[in-house]
Length: 474
Ligand SMILES: Cc1cc2nc3c(=O)[nH]c(=O)nc-3n(C[C@H](O)[C@H](O)[C@H](O)COP(=O)(O)OP(=O)(O)OC[C@H]3O[C@@H](n4cnc5c(N)ncnc54)[C@H](O)[C@@H]3O)c2cc1C
Image (cartoon, rainbow, N blue to C red):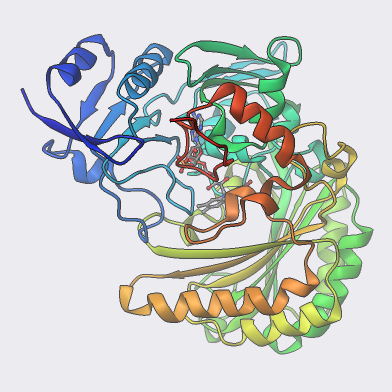
């Protein structure tokens, strides 16, 4: 029998032995402690900047394991983190010295093509979900990188290529099963526990552990019109001003994003351009035939592009098109603003800072949102930022720890310089580890979320997240 040391919520170190063995006996999944050979592997998450050593992982095989894990955490008042896909930039999937309720092994996705509904377990990735749903020509809006976890993405809101047409991921969530801090499984939907349902749609992991999500699906593809139009960086200021007009005129069928970065060695770009700063327009059109071609023609007409790679392609392929640039294991630091317009000053600052990228993997992107997202009232569910037209992400990425300070400083400086041109709101899933912007993330819904937190998690058991601070009675 191994002695396991675990931190409690009030910072004491507990030594548990028989208690852990009893838990092991109740599980269908497994326990991984620091002496296990797979421990080093299991504690890796997407962002290599995060180096945390949990005391114990409960690798859950199903909802029953989650129930046992939450009851165990509650009984011994353990510092507890919850891991889905492990992609969160802040590293909130892990905690030092505490318990991790790891739902990553729960990856089942079941599509009901007749009712157009998906039942998705919380360890599923976006790729798992898309591949199952696309076998039936169906999809729901998710993010742009196929290895991201459905769980964390959904609980924070979720947006991607389909969101202007079909809304955020949460706008398509029709129910969930949640293990609350009381150690009970609750059903949350419009009729049952509607408050809990309201709160998990944007309130992150604050209110419990989701063991199953239920999504509405739409007919998509299986081919969509998507691709990239890459222009010279030398005209970036003018191109971003024209982009502002094209984005404003775009129908909801079209999502038009722009990325400033150094050109990867893509085969459709001349070798001389590889490694040089470029302006990349990325588009996805889901709708009437001809709409995608028209969008590409408008982007081509902006000047003399270095290269174009666009056309009909399987939606699943487009959903993983950016994966090679977003592989796990690199060091990453993000700063993000919500924007309602791209002011001239913001554009000028963007061009200046994009000309000084600290490493070849860094980028600044503007994700176009709006459309259907805006047609949902800000208080309809916990996610509040319905007014945003763009989400800007300053994505700093590098490999060598020696570059930490320079990369972080560049991102912070650009972020500060552009803050006066932003709404002040931020997407909860884009906040780095060192940033206290929880109120900005939950915005006008913070008050109601605080009441729900008090009701569903009065001890703040679920605190390793963008945490809704409540007074915890001793
Ligand atoms: C490369 C990359 C691309 C991205 N692109 C997009 C994008 O296009 N659109 C977008 O909206 N977001 C995007 N994101 C952000 C993404 O939504 C967040 O990183 C999200 O937190 C990932 O969820 P996860 O389950 O993988 O993360 P994890 O780190 O496992 O979980 C994050 C947090 O969610 C909570 N959580 C996880 N699972 C559960 C559960 N079952 N029950 C309760 N709480 C839980 C926990 O608090 C946990 O700390 C991207 C992230 C990355 C790294």
